[in-house]
Amino acid sequence: MRVFRIIPTLFYTVVVYNILALLGGDILNAGIWKIGLVSGAEWSLSVNELILTLSVIFLYIEIFKSTRTSTSSIIDHGLSMGLFIICLLEFIMIPSMGNSTFFIIMLICLLDVVAGFTVTISTARRDFGIGAHAMDS
Image 1 (cartoon, helix red, strand yellow):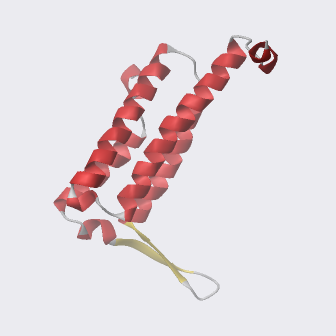
Image 2 (tube, helix red, strand yellow):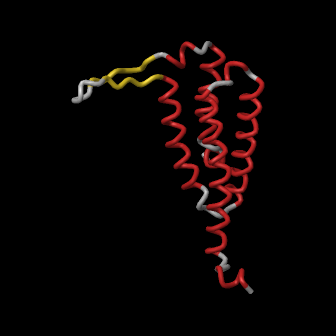
């Protein structure tokens, strides 16, 4: 179970997106449901939008995980960086990944990397008692 702590949760949405995109892009555009609203408008949700929603939720989990200062969080950050690089390469090299939905997933992966390092550094400063006054001297 410890292995699942260091695997970035965004990895799962990237894998699901890869599988569905490589099977055929039509699956990603398929509607999951439609709900009529009081205003008379109809709100629909596609597979693409569901994956984006899960990615945003997983980004929150990743930011929460980055508050830990342990060896596993360092590994998690390294894997997050690797996931972003893989997404970037897929975006520019694989035709079925060159779309706005995957670009947003890739951007979420980048935010995971940047936020993860930022939060970890801030948490480490607090944990080790390095305040702003120590940085000035």
